[in-house]
Length: 379
Image (cartoon, rainbow, N blue to C red; front, side, top):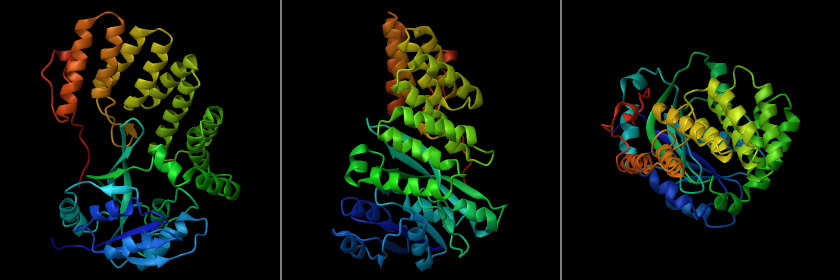
């Protein structure tokens, strides 16, 4: 399908394990591939060239923004898409993306960036789904900022405060959150070093405390992670993105859960739910606190609230299944503990139906009529 051209820009180092799947997933979708290689010693460069990529060697300068921007400088497409090697476009997404760029809103240049649906695969086989900005118009003023956890939107807004972003259900699968992948790439040590440098250079930026808290969680430093998230939440200003803000609430509660501070978990989850009542993951964390203290009825009440809400909106980084089948599974387990096999069997049955038919609306009694398709603003 003819239309605006797309450049894929990536930065890589020793990614021979994942790069073929990533580049294979965008075949027929992008018009050129720009690879910035920061010192690979394996077959990464040969693999990239086999897929027709233009490879740009660049010494690593302790800055993801610098490396991203180097690739952007070489891009010739009308649009720039950026991915990491541990990410793959969903099956059959190529035609959808090309069709998207031919829509009227795009042709009239009302949209400057496009958010894709990212499915972050986590330990245990689940996913966290969130919309992330990963495509922008190819303009020389659109460049990344930040040594680590680099961002492009702040600079775009400086150039055009009224710009609009589109949000679409084109899926990208991300496998880098799996612990085995993090360990294989030694990302923990790299991220800690860069974050420490960034925090020293910009101590007034509260977002670094959020990212530092995530690294501490991965290191199982639960007290440190809890403290870092609390610093972030205390310093967060009104212009902090809702996605990061709500995730910080969630990670703080996860630290309390793992510390087995269940009374604090119930109290803080109640406060977080009052702020973000649509974030169903918070109800699950509250239920864990309640059930751990033997307050089974309170845990059931919290999960039933989550089920009545359904899947969290795309602005939240939510575990897939919260508000649907995972909620029903947990309700089934709790009702089993209470010696109520009828309710337990019902929720286990509903959970199995949800997994098999994620778009279904079940014809159950009124309290169980749950719609699994959430409305989203799409192009």
